Length: 103
Image (tube, rainbow, N blue to C red; front, side):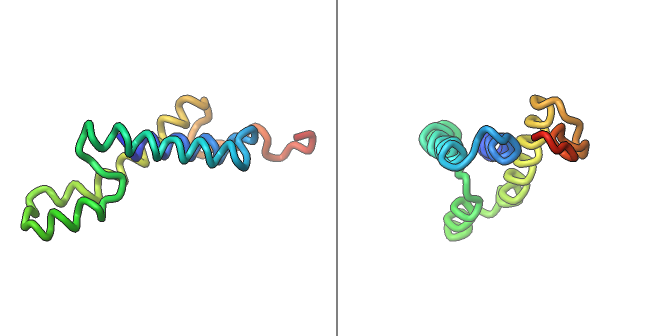
């Protein structure tokens, strides 16, 4: 879920012309901060799979390590899909400002 939230915000600020410069940086930075402040302590997850993989490998707890690469990939896909649903564009469809000279 942490990666899904982050991907949702990144997609929103990357495709919306109203979020430029500092606004985009604040939105992404705020999402990372909230993920770290609330998501980590509540779920025990980390946003960086290497941060979880290293200590688990050193401790010899390799039973759940297969989920580490799958989690962020599935989360990013879920966040991108959720943004496409909220925005109302079909995946792969051209955006409304492509090919227009009045934008």
